[in-house]
Length: 97
Image (cartoon, rainbow, N blue to C red; front, side):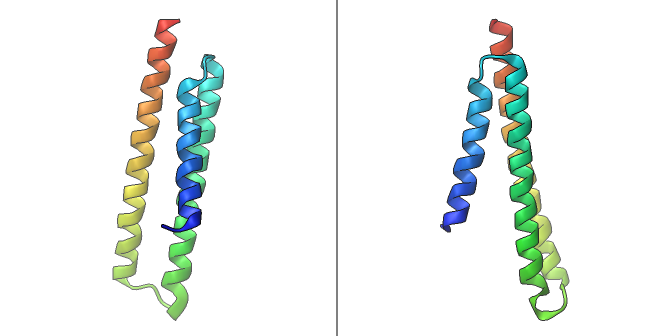
């Protein structure tokens, strides 16, 4: 696994964990927003990387575009699942208070 991929996973996961563990409701939502922003930055970097790779020969084929759609869909599904989990944890934590 590439080093930058490892840093992406660790950074992104740590932000989501911090969001879940923050005791104050406002800070939890701020952390959640930062986590989502970081995830979007990672997604954009994947798209830029794909574009550079796909456009290397001067044209983007249908197969290359399908690869982008599949990869992006996977990233967005992961982002949605992680965000849903954090929102559930935050809401459960806030109900306890």
